[in-house]
Structures are given as structure tokens and as C-alpha cells.
Image (tube, rainbow, N blue to C red; front, side, top):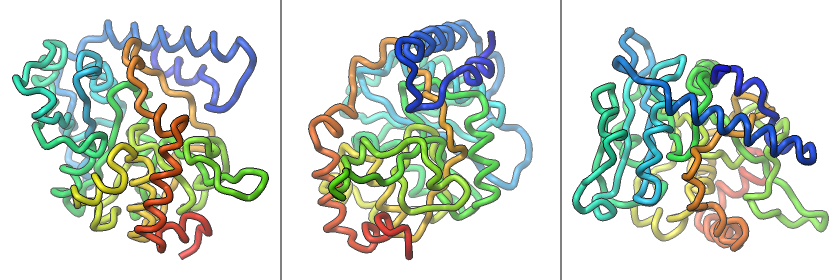
Length: 306
């Protein structure tokens, strides 16, 4: 069994068959982990061909996951469409001695660049890259606990060529409401929907770590403000992406309607950063703060109109 077959066999996210869905996911997830653990990187994993588009893959990590992140990076290195750069951003205050696992350090010889920076929580994955982004460059953000399907970057780039001014994502949730007409917690919006599949939309909350392509000049200027990030959405880059593109007038489109559930790195899920946002209702608090700070963006998100 190879990794393309594993992705083919997965059920789309939000599809539930009692017992079977969970069993199938656990089997495929374990197999995906084993394949990547055994696969050796033997040559430079970056693009060597001349292309019109510079592709920068970027992610971040923190001490609780640093021993696992090399597997996520390997899944990026083994993409069918190779990136031109792979950056891992680490906060200096979280790693005072800069001591890192050997499995991670070994990947530097194949193209990984480890960058030290200030701590901006999950925002590190895009912040420093888009500050230096070139007009012919796209920045694709990833997470440190996901094993990416081999055609992830390929799908993003193909869609980017069709919609060069849009933010492209593998996974996003469409705005959704309760029966009484009130807005649902953003973490509970619809994952499977027609929104943003054939027509670019403002009404999507993209998953920044799911493979998310940021075009040049795609974010509003406040995305470069550490003060605004820390004040409004320090622990919620999902909603920040949504508001920064909406405020800029950048629409979002998904690579496909039926997103397949991601494989996750075994052992990395002991730290669930999304739990507080959804269950603790932090999403709704951040949503309200962003609504007040960016009323134009909020109106675009709710109405899907300029």
C-alpha cells in the first residue's frame, strides 16, 4: 500500500459510518505513519526546475511537538509538486539552547531551513514569509502534526493558476447558523459544502495548517502587525486568515468539495490547541472582537458580497 492509495481509501471529512469510519481511519492513519517513518529522503527535496511561480512551504512548531514535526516535513518533501523553499519557524524563547532532535536536523541537508524568530504562536507559519513575499511567490502554510497527501501542493498550485488572486485551501468551513438564526461557533461550521468550490467566496474559514496558499498581496496590512495579532487573535490564526483576506478583498476557494480527513502524526495529539477555541467558546469571543475591529470584512464574510 502506498500513500496515494491511502488518501484514495479515506472517507471525506464529516462522513460518519458508525464504528467503521473510526476503524478505517485508525488503520489508514497507522499505515500512513509507518510508511513515512520508513521512507528515506535521499536527495534534495526542493524544486530544481525553472518555473514562473516560486513556491514557499512554511510551518512552525513548539517544544511539545518538536520531536514529531520531522514527519510532517518529510510529507512536504515527498510531494509530487516540489516546493522551492521549506521553512520551519521556531521561537527562540521556546528553545533557549536551540537544541533540536536529530531526525529534524538531518532534514536540513535535503532543503529544510530552520529559522529562529519571535513567538507569534501559530502566526509564525505565515508572518515572516509574507513580509518578504515576492510578486511571483506563493506561501503555502502547513501544520506540525499532519501527514500531507502527496498531491496536496499540486492541487493548490493547479487551483492557484485558475484563481491567481484568491487564497486557496485544501480545507475550509462555510459560515453556518443555528436554527434560531444566530451564528454558530466557527469551529462547528460546515466542512462539506458547495461554498467556495466553483466560485470564490468570502464566507469560508480556511484551515491555515491544512495546506493553505497565500497569494502575493493576499492579506490586509494588519497581518504584518504583531500588536494587532496579539491583541485580537493571538491563538486563533484560522479566523485571522478569514478576516485578513476579507478586509483585503481577497476571496477564498477550495481545491475540492469532499476534503479527506488528514492523517495525523501518532503521539502529536496530546496537545490539542483547537480544544479551547471550540469547546471553551474562545472562537466566538475572537469572532466578536474581529467583527468590531473589521466591520467591512465581517459584512463580506456574512453576505459574501463586496
